[in-house]
Image 1 (cartoon, rainbow, N blue to C red):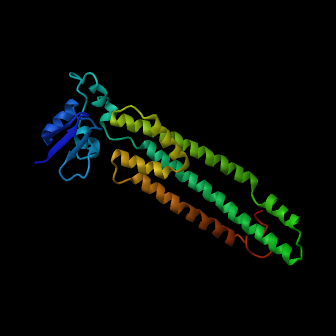
Image 2: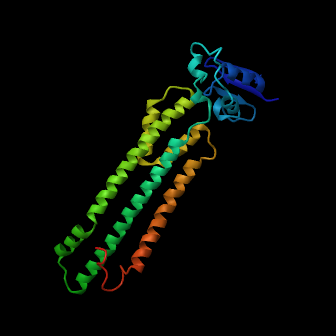
Length: 255
């Protein structure tokens, strides 16, 4: 028979059989964040991240005999807290960052083609005997970017980063509600920062926090991060090659 122990911030309690633990979860004596341990575990873990989470998922508010005092919040009597965690905002972050990677991949394509153009112009002037650095610098600085496209892509990238930060902030708040605790502003701020700068890290930390071993959102976001630039790059350069960008006499076609 499995024997469980838990701590109530005063002392270790137990051992208890699983049926006893299930009853204590039902009454609110053990809540989602209560540290628990059983034989075979290497460390104390929060109850919701163990096999006991089944009892929290099956738990429903007791209308006739609601928990009283400090146990009202801890017992998670709000219906929203009783079901599985909401992943809609996490999927929103995945979609936002996939769009961000697409936009920046297109930006890098513009950059690469601009470098190619600069090399073509530079080689052309050298072959004609022009060594005037000012002339070459003019082509480099004024013709390096497609300015309108770059400005538009930069604005879109910024908007997507802000959207990702907002989604991470809101998602951290919803996870706290799922656990039946007050939102931690510090966690929300760090979540928003990770969402803005590098959402993959936020998704990994999120999965760890809620005990999600599959980490589906993290892996899909990582795949998007690695594959989308390759796909966009291959597609863009295929168009450039077949469109004659590198052929003789057509090197300025797209500029």
